[in-house]
Image (tube, rainbow, N blue to C red; front, side, top):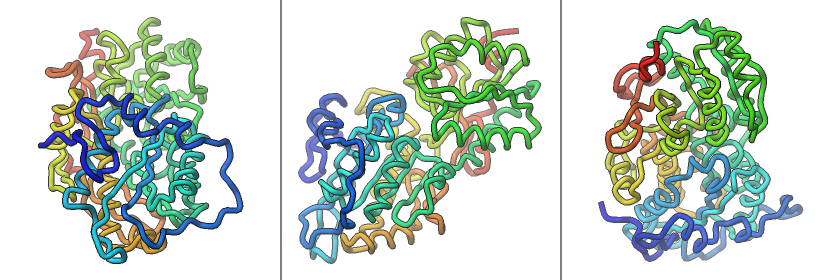
Length: 443
C-alpha cells in the first residue's frame, strides 16, 4: 500500500511523511485555542445551512487527542488521513447539486477528553467553520456533548467508538447517529470468556464515576447477577483516584477471583499496580475501555499486563472490508504497523468506518443540504470495515464485537488473542481464555 502520509492535494490534512502526531496537532491547529474554546454554547443562533456554492466538503472531527482517553485516538491522524485520501483518490465525491466532484476535507479538534471542551468544539465547528457533516468518536465524554450541539443546530452527525446504550441516554435523536457496539453484546463476550476459567464466580466491580462508568456499572450489576455471579460492588470512584487500598482490601476479604472494571488507562494503571503490590492477583481481570490498547497494557510496566482482557471492538482477523477501497481489515492494520512503526489498535476499524458511512451518505444525498444528508444517514445500509451498519428508528447501528486477552507477544511485547465471539458466532477466535494464575505460573 502507498504511504498515505505524503501530502495530497485536497485531502484536507496535508500530512507529510515523518510528521509526528505532536507536530501534526500544531500544524493542523487542533489544540483547544485554535477553535477559540468557550465555556458555553452561543445562543439565539439560527440553524446552520449549506452555502449555495462550495468548492469542498468539510467534516468536523472532535477527538480526545490528549487527556485520559487519548489511547482511543492513538491511530489519529493516520487513520483519518488515510480515509480522506481514499475518499479523494479520484478527485472527491460527485455532488449533483454542485455539478462536479468536491474534495473532502476534515478539521480535527482536540477535546482534551473533557465534556465541556467537546461541546464547545462542536459548536465552534458548526458556527465558525460551517461544517457539512460532524464525525465524532471515542467515549461519552466527547461524543455526547458534540451530539447535543448537532441536535441544537440541526447538523448531521455520526459517531463511532461510543456504546449505543450510552449514546441513547442523550436522546431522542433526529440529527445524530451512532454506529458502535452494544454493552449487551460485550457482556455476552465476557461471560463466554469467563466460562473457560474455573472460578468461584465472585466479581469485584470497579467503575469510574463518569457517564461511561456509571451506565456500564448499572448494566453489569444486572447482567452478572442474572448470569449467576456474585457481584462485590463497593461504589463508583472519581477519576484520578490515587489510592485503591480500601477497594482492594474489600475484594480480598470477599475472596474475589474476577476483577471487572471500566476506567481510563491512567486509572487502571494505578489500581493494577497497587493490586500487585498488595498481592491481590485475580484469576481474571477484564477491563473495559482501558485494556483495549497495547500501549496502555505495556504502560503497566514489566509483565503485569499478561492475561488482562477486554472487549474486542475490532480485529485484523475480522472478515470486514473497506467499502471505499475493498481493503481487508488485515491489509489496513498491516499498513498502519508498517507506516507508523506501532502495533495496530482496535479503534482503527471504528474510526475508519465513520468516514465510509459519510462517503456513502453524500453519494446518495447528492447535495450538501443538511436535511437531505440527515435523511440519507437514516437510510444507511452499508458493509464497512467495522461490520454491517444499518441505523434503526433510534438512530443507532449495532456493530459486532468479541473479547480479547493479552498474551506474550512475538513482534510486540503483547499479542491480542481473540478468546470469544459472544453474540457473533461468525467472528473468528484464537482459542479460549486462560487464567492469569496459569499464565503467570501461580499455584
